Amino acid sequence: MSALVEIKDVCKIYNPGENEVRALDHVSLTIDEQEFVAIIGHSGSGKSTLMNMLGCLDVPTSGEYWLHGQDVSALSDDALSDIRNREIGFIFQGFNLIPNLTALENVELPLIYRGVSKSVREELSVEALKKVGLEHRMDHKPSEMSGGQQQRVAIARAIAQAPPVILADEPTGNLDSNSTKEIMDILKGLHKEGRTVILITHDNEIAAQAKRVIKIKDGKVESDSGQIVPVEELQTAGA
Image 1 (cartoon, rainbow, N blue to C red):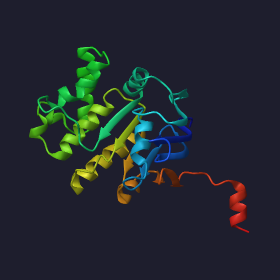
Image 2: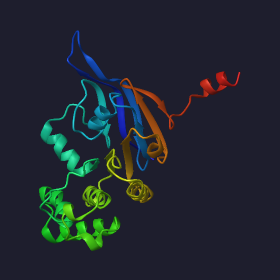
Image 3: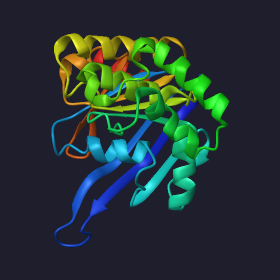
Image 4: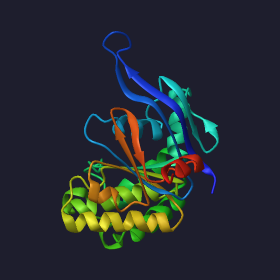
């Protein structure tokens, strides 16, 4: 598998100078296509800053971020917006649904911005809602659905145009245990279909369901369960 995400020696510094805050401190990592990765850390660890970087919502102070072989570290806002539209499906803790639109209309909305024709976007949206088990709720508005159903609409919206990367920020944070299981099962299913899923969480039990766990602490990668240990380190450990 080829690398989808490559972050090279990335720093994100706020208030440069005497009172600077290093939200990310020389972070390097690679995520391959079709991986299911959880990025975990406590509040203030830097995981949200890393998520913003991965989602092209922010750019690093220094270092490089390569997405699909393109260096996106210093692109303009318009160029980053275009990449977000094409490459990344976002799922947020707060659902971010438009209250006066139906489930189907909420899923269609980003496709309108992308210039997808009416017939095609309706077909894609219906298919996405079926995939998350909401074919019977397509005409319902968010207030007429449970939290778990609203999050499934948000997932359908994220996957409708089959972006290669699904970036899920605390997607189960507002849900009960049954809805949490439903959402995690959907994310696992998307991974099995070949999507790259990057899950941001503070919950160890949620993170443990991913295939790889990256722990962020004080703006640095503290541990990475997918990291390959160099041969010389293995030999030293066995000595």
